[in-house]
Image 1 (tube, rainbow, N blue to C red):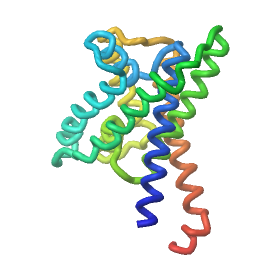
Image 2 (cartoon, helix red, strand yellow; image 1 turned 180 degrees about the vertical axis):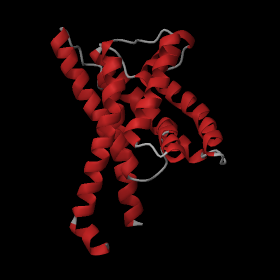
Image 3 (cartoon, helix red, strand yellow; image 1 turned 90 degrees about the vertical axis):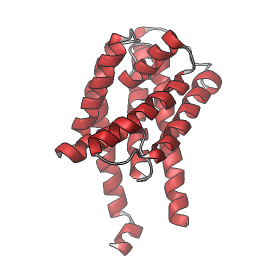
Length: 208
């Protein structure tokens, strides 16, 4: 129970950290991450909040992932998209409404901070080894099917989202290209760091 509770806390903290990074990128206004640009584009064109589209698109991806893996749909994937959608709307519409950054340098600084926080959030919640966000389950599915690294498959899935967001007129900018190139690397780097820290911890040594 204690182990599951610890994993759950890490999991929720990771999702909240990810949502925090997403909202920072939205406020930086130099180009939103591809998946987020897709959510914003759908929100602008159809309606509903950005967080709502996190849930809707994620639900569709759950079934796409099942086809790639040739398995039954992972319905547990609805848990993280519900939490992430709620966190994004909470931070974007309630908590971080005070953010008002002007000037190209401050905006890019906010963007880079948000990007690093996003990479950390993804790595942390994946480290908990609980239900994956369908977006990242797509990354993991491709990793399992191809044998490529998480960094490579993350970059590929971000590129797919980029194309969809562009076609729908999402808020694509220079920052989007930077995100496509760097987020996969950041996730992979934080993933290795967390595993190294866990492996070198006294608790891990006792159970090894």
